[in-house]
Image (cartoon, rainbow, N blue to C red; front, side, top):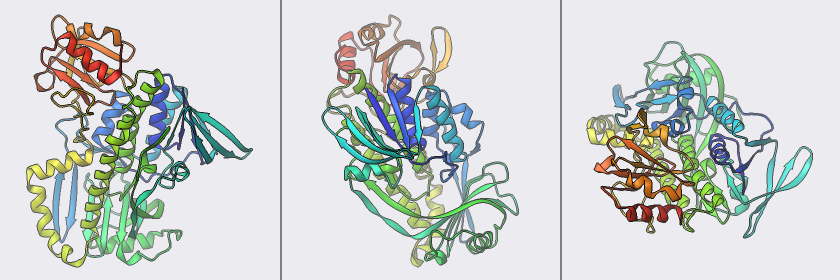
Length: 490
């Protein structure tokens, strides 16, 4: 089986790499002729870093970024701190790192695994039948067709794949244009994500750790400025001066743009053999820095399901769970970012009470913890498919458990295979692992020493790091039933 991925951003790159790692024939088509240095996304959240960890690439990107453990909100002359430290994750922070560096890392991995990346290839036609998908591709040398068993559109907010499918992109645009820039302020700001909320708008300044910051600015007075008008340092300083009450001014600016933020979601993530992921499936306000992270997590959910289709062991319902699981997550992301946006760029009455209400909410431990887990992706839990057995924690993210395997101390994320299920057996006799032997082509069965969630003796982990099934002292028949439900007959 072959797969064509359209769009060489972070979502497309990690998806293509995962498929290639499983032995799938993958072609990655990118409309842009040159590699992009676009750096709209500036942050990697804990769950995304955990997915990188399962692929052995987390430490490399962490070395290139800056670890930020709190948000310092300034509004109405008050400061409010939100703790971003995640006690449940190895990555207890938000990593600020330029999108170009993330893309470079994922591209190196994809190319190392054998992905063919073709730049300057624009998809202009799409036709699918029961056996596959045919794309019409235009390049400098003319037009030609390419065919694959499946196509995944990861080609951004203006997705050609989504348009050719005729899938609606429901939602709306925000009125306020957004200024983006990489800046060096006149004076160093605290090592935190620094939002300033003022009567004229909002400025968000996360640090890169080298004296430079990403500036994301909403300024009500600039709503009617054309999007193609360049951003000057004087204009940015004027906005920052009013919004931060003179606290921030820019000494240098290396890159800038302005864009119109939108709140939209594809009505469907799958139409036959064509699927959508990343910005092709959902776009939203950059508040919360959730866009790129949500797309990468789309890819992690989808890749192993396509691999299961290729290898012939996928139950007939499995690929449908991609939309069933990720569409609600995308919808929730839109709601969260929209709420933050509305609170930041609010009407007069809300602006008046905001400095009094927000600090009180943040001080409530359960509220701040819920916000932290929601934005970081750590709270995502998938609904149990009706075709599989119910058990404790089904669909929940699995912690990076400390384990001993074959006498060596290790972690769960070092054992998880992103393309196969992982069955952990902590019993002395290893009955669960023995029962799983006939499924060795799709399940990695390991006898380990350690404490599993909910006191389980056996834990079946999905390739994307979520619980598929668990049990205390299961018999061989229960193990076989769980594996058959998720991965078909041995």
